[in-house]
Length: 204
Image (tube, rainbow, N blue to C red):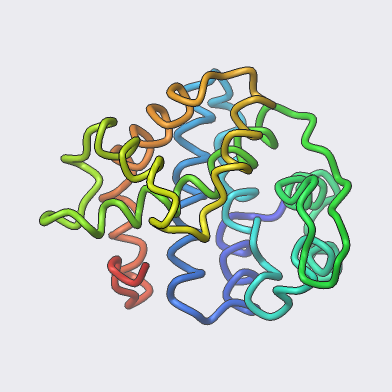
């Protein structure tokens, strides 16, 4: 398996925008948290790498998102199982060139990625509206209020989030609660990694 350090270097080869680096580090940390929480501690690093690389092609090839990823990942020596997991987070979503992604998430890890990816963006956007600019003092009711406001963070698809919860067999509240807990638990770690890369944690 590709090492975490090599995966991060591969990510940075194709992603320069601080927002995309921040999102990748956020999803990596959230995926590792979920791995531990759901009883997959032995696979924590694997879950994290999938999260880190999930949007590798988005910055350069937004109209071919999840279609260009296999090529970029294979060139970086990434294994087929990680490539499948990365591509599966676009399942059923039509990208800019009109192609609908048909790689289905089958593993619980893949379903978590699908469900949590968009939601992390919504949670960050909610945090930035708070005086603290932090998730740590955010309550579920505040997140749900923003979630229900269709005009807020409109780029974060509620339909995808809800489809993700359904694929996991979870109520939406469970997904919201756990992903918020994950981001609260990981916020300091994410900020440390952003600082190490000289990226502000308030770029979202």
